[in-house]
Every structure is written in structure tokens, then in C-alpha cells.
Length: 206
Image 1: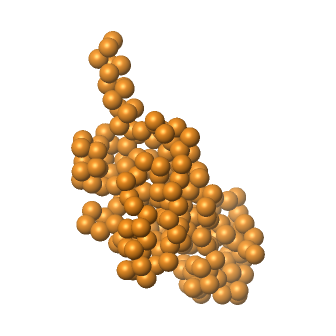
Image 2: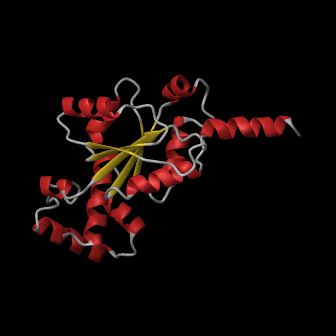
Image 3: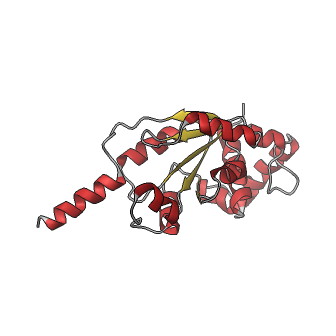
């Protein structure tokens, strides 16, 4: 079983492979390690065939040793339901990748313009401690992002309309064996749309 320090490195390299960032800098953000300590840990992972010689990519063994969870949503206003759901999603694996819906998709789903742009929502979700990486989704095919991330688990929020069967079948088409987990929220009435509506009503009532 891998030590937690090794999982930090593998997770950081995995995320860096997707977003093109420097894995060393990402590891430094998560730890207080020196460059020598980081390189020593990576060299050990290379020796055990979890990391490739380039120090920037995982071997097949390294990737399969990580349990990646994928979650998605609009995340226009972050509320307690989101925090609970994302924490629950992170507990299912080692790495949590979150996909925010594009502005156009949000309009189709919510029948309104989002308060924040897709880039703002991405930045907001990326700032949450339990999230390892936040991506902006694909409008034409959600499975393009799924194929890029290759998660072992796809976590659905309590209020998401996606059907587990449709997602499972879509994963099979890209040769991905992923489990679908439906997460429950302790605050089922909490939603961005409701918060926005109540806020608007309170303003008009002043």
C-alpha cells in the first residue's frame, strides 16, 4: 500500500498531465517539502515503476494505483450542499476532478444566465480545498471530458438529472469501466437557483 506522501506526488503528477502545469510546483503547494525531498520521493516512485523517467507522467501502474473521482455541476453560487457533496465525492477516492458546465449549457439547464462566467466558476471551484482540479466542460459531448480524466468513479449530486444507466453506457463506448455513485445532500432544499430567487425577493422587500 502506498504511503500518503507517495499519493500526494502521484495525484499531483496526474493533475499536471491534464492541465499542463508543473507537478513540482503543485507538490510544493500541497507540502512543505524541499526540492531534494520531492526529487528523492519521485526517484523512488520511478524505481518502483509508478512514475516515468521524465518525472512528469505516470506509468500504467502509477495511474491505476490512483482512484480518481469525477463530479460535475454548474456551481454558480457555492452553498453548503455543494460543500457536503464535494467532500463526500473526495472521500470516494484519492483525486477529485470537478467539471463546471459552460455558460451555454447552464442557460439550457437553468433557463437563465449564470451570475458568474464559466471561468469565474472554474476559479471558484478550484479554490476549494477538497478539489484537486476543476475543468470547464465540453458542450457537444460530456464524454470527451470523461475520456480525458478517465475516472474510476463518477459522482452525481442528489439533484442532478443525469441517469446512472446512460452514464454507464456512455463510459462503455469509450472503454471505461467507471462506477456511478449518487451522493445525497443533507440540505436537499439548498440550490443556487433557490438562493438567487430568495435573495432577489429579499432585496425587493426592502
